[in-house]
Amino acid sequence: MPCNCCEMENNTFGEDEAKANLKYYRKRGPAKQTKLILEAIRSLKLKDVALLDIGGGIGTIHHELLKDVASEATHVDASSAYLKVATEEAKRLGHSEQVKFIHADFTDVADELPKVDIVTLDRVVCCYPNFRELLKAASSKSRTAIALTYPRDVWWTRVAVRVANFFQGLGKDPFRVFVHSVSEMEALLKSEGLKRMSTRRLLVWEMSLYQRVNR
Ligand SMILES: C[S@@+](CC[C@H](N)C(=O)[O-])C[C@H]1O[C@@H](n2cnc3c(N)ncnc32)[C@H](O)[C@@H]1O
Image (cartoon, rainbow, N blue to C red; front, side, top):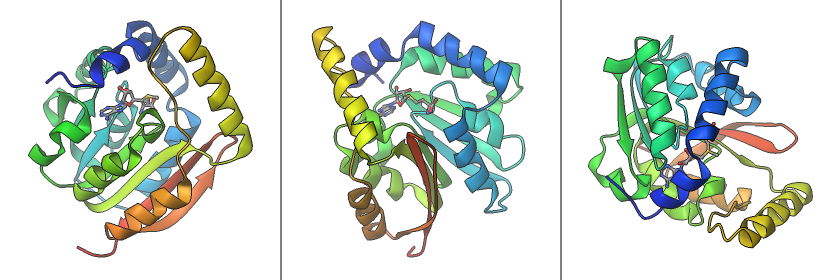
């Protein structure tokens, strides 16, 4: 289903970007911040779970977790170019039957989706202005845990994002990057019954794993 943000995401996360990401993944494996999500999920020692990957890009998280943790996955993405590449790679890996691909703004379709065990958002909240709406909808789908990466809330990411957004504006591109308040994201997830279990940091990215404490 086409969505309000899909056109913008299609422009920003287009075919060339998707192909470059796939090339990197095939050559070097998951990116550093994605590895933090994979390690956090694997630390839970789960088997045969259902995964929901929001804004999964080329599908790295389900390509990897379908090997040992998940038995089924749903990938919701606003970029049709990324979904196309993710679908082809899932086919190549023999996972086609286990992954459902949905082209949409997740917040538009969340109500129609079933609950799953694990929800992941790798570098997605920073693409979305209304992180509250996105994380509330994401947490409503998670029975067990959510793992997400986002830019660290520090001066150097805020400066870099300001510069990037300035050039986006000059190019008349409506897409913007956001450094959302980490404490506000945590407060929201806590109010949804999720507790932060671990956090790991790279220079730019931070990964947090939240587990459900209230059902
Ligand atoms: C920076 S890319 C990250 C892709 C992948 N997770 C990764 O880390 O390589 C952001 C992705 O989130 C998707 N996205 C952003 N907001 C979304 C939303 N509200 N619903 C679904 N997908 C969204 C974009 O289309 C894009 O594929």
